[in-house]
Image (cartoon, rainbow, N blue to C red; front, side, top):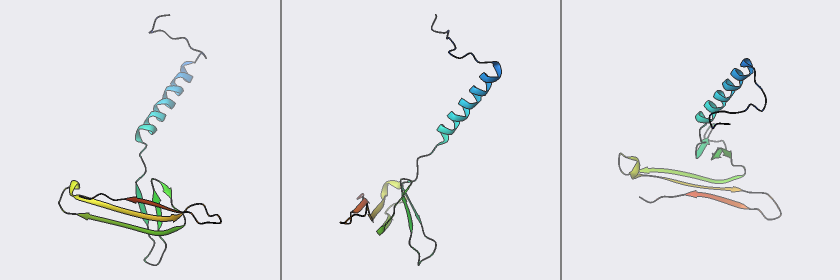
Length: 107
């Protein structure tokens, strides 16, 4: 068998072949459009509510402390910083497990 030839393991009718190709095209289109989740999302209903915090698409439960600070010294992205610090409860057992996520870059 030449490299350009192939053998159908399961013979496909013209209709089935068209459906298979369309399904494959849709799957590829979905995968190409799939986006990475945002690094950080903070949702606040009002100033008295507990924020909903999502880090890399995952909701953080048991929030203890959340701080976010953005500062720029120039009009370009290279001169800006995002300082993120979050503390939350991990798995609750006899001894509380406090987890921390932090990002800090000095300019």
